[in-house]
Length: 321
Ligand SMILES: [Ca+2]
Ligand SMILES: [Ca+2]
Ligand SMILES: [Ca+2]
Ligand SMILES: [Ca+2]
Image 1 (cartoon, rainbow, N blue to C red):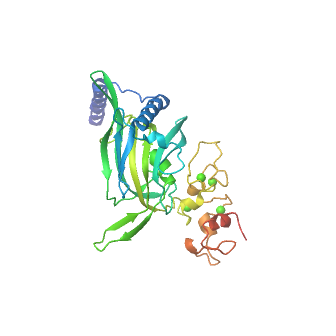
Image 2: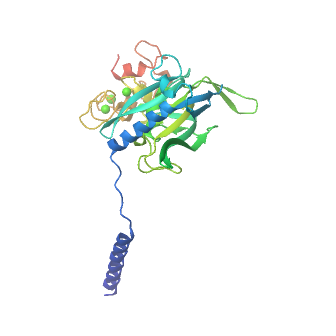
Image 3: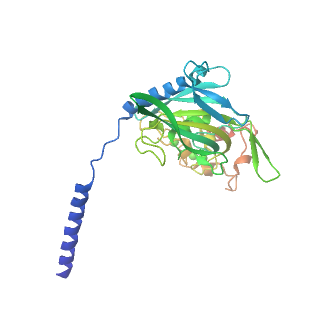
């Protein structure tokens, strides 16, 4: 009996808690439509590209972006669109949220080392700003606001965990060279450097983040110092060697959409598929020696015996004998 009484009281309390919270909660605004917000963001980004110029690029590729003064003759960032020499303002198409985003990025320097795939980890210095419009005396202006920077990065970011815009742009840059200093620090040179102009749908969209308001397009100046290769499915083959079409990008695509990086067509791209060719034997087991001992990646022989050729793994997977 007591037990029933207890449950009854608990039930009443629960119901009143729920009804209480329902009454007190402000109406939640549904997120904006991606396509509508994208149109606004693209307009803001293109206006920024046309109204601002790269004032200064230091030898260390620190950028200073400034608004072109009235009557000024400075070349806008836009003037570098599809330039054949650096700086180059380029763009990528990104299919997401049932729309095709145009993602602009400025390459100041390409770099001389390796490019990450969109599933690798990067060590990058960066400076982040968001774009917003403010109205003063009925005059609306678009302006950047600084929110965060990292000048001496210590932490690698996995591009699958960062904003989509980073994962889409970083494979377009390469690392450089580095040397150790007597005081234990590292100097980076000749690295890829540029500026990314990211619509909010490829960034934080309606959620915002720390100092970033919701629906804010972002501008990141970046310097790619180092990369870490990732082996997501732990089969001994780094992701970038499971990028079958070699475009630097690997994705999980909706059911029915052909995926160029999915050898057996089971819907799981190779970099996440522990059995790439779908023969029932895990890839990891297929790269063992005669005694079943896993062959270290670097020493896996290729059909042609060239162990330095990255394509050797692909050949191995198509059952070279
Ligand atoms: Ca792998
Ligand atoms: Ca690919
Ligand atoms: Ca597969
Ligand atoms: Ca297999």
